[in-house]
Amino acid sequence: MVTSSPGRVRLPGESMSLSLRFTVRSDKGLVREVNEDSVYAAPHLLVVADGMGGHAAGEVASSVVISHMAELGPERTRAEPMEALRGAILAGNRAIADAVRTSPELEGMGTTLTAVLMEADSDQFVVANVGDSRTYLMRDGELVLLTRDDSLVQTLLDDGRITAAEALAHPQRSMVTKALVGGESLSPTLFRLRTLPGDRFLLCSDGLSDLVPEAQLAAALGLSGREEAADRLVELALAAGGRDNISVVVADVVQGEAPARPIVSRTPRQTPHRDKRPLYALAAAALAAGLAAYVLRSR
Image (cartoon, rainbow, N blue to C red; front, side, top):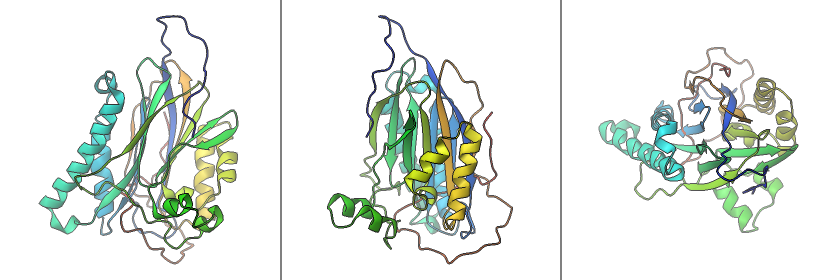
């Protein structure tokens, strides 16, 4: 896992102001009727949430959580960015519990989440994850997976009971061991990462990472344009079967401010796909919703 880099030398008292230029893509895939992913992207914050629950419940869960994450403006995260991010995740988890109490038919809904938050006047970002949505970093042509999946397959890998090749085809590869489901004991993983101008982040739901090998992810992310890279990633997932919703955020770290309006992606794509494949079972504790499947472009 990448945790730090030397960066450039700064004079005492000098701050490095970084921000994010981003592109969002979301597609419901070739199998699922509803896109249950939700995405939020702003110059200081990126979030992907992959919902579960069926009957639109996953869509509700991911949208609820994204709404809380979107409240994390720069002024709210300046003093204690890691705790602010943790607090927003836990608030989203509590909101899921409140929604289920109000509407019992939503029982069982939940969402995964991965997020990247820029620290003000710094070259550091806070990375968070719950579940199996992922954050990658590309630096100098090398792709590194920053997050660790909270999943059954990851546990089996860690224990040496299966190989990486076996993990890709494991029948329970979508089973998560941690998700935002409204429980009281949620413990998200958070850590700091030092970045450099020119670094590129990829945040994605498992509709991409479960189907596309990392070598292909790296090749797509190596394309110079963010929009071209994001389009290519979705194309690769669809070509591999598109059996789940596919959401990606491709974001470049740049020096100075990168003014852009936030993108909230929740609207399902209306264009039908002709190639239908058998439905693969969704993991019991995973993926949350509200996926914007109109192809959304960065500003």
